[in-house]
Length: 148
Image (cartoon, rainbow, N blue to C red):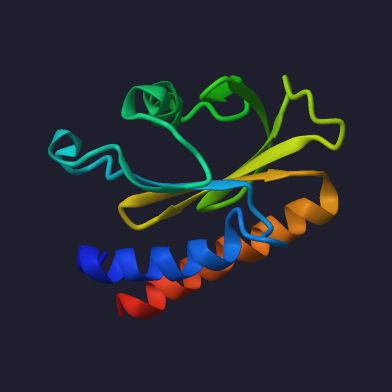
């Protein structure tokens, strides 16, 4: 999926507008190296992150969940948050946090884009989920446009 420098430029521009800034739709986002057909041990798990402070060890249970591909039958964790899948589509899925203390709720959208997984975290319900999906779509579009 293109060179890393181009991917990083797209990430930095997108994250500045979509994550953790005033009025941004996302509270955090991670770009994970994920290529099931490639030698994953050669790359760091977390390629980029914004608005979160995770280490590779924090993301391993999530990646194991993805590899098992049993999305609707299991709860998955990202850090201390546990999620239940609410919607599955061809290259992405959504989940709602089941152990949040936030009265408005929290959710996550995960999209596979080439050799990456974009993990987008948001607070709120339906309106927030719609805004988060727009942000995720924008990143995918920008990254795919850059790498054509």
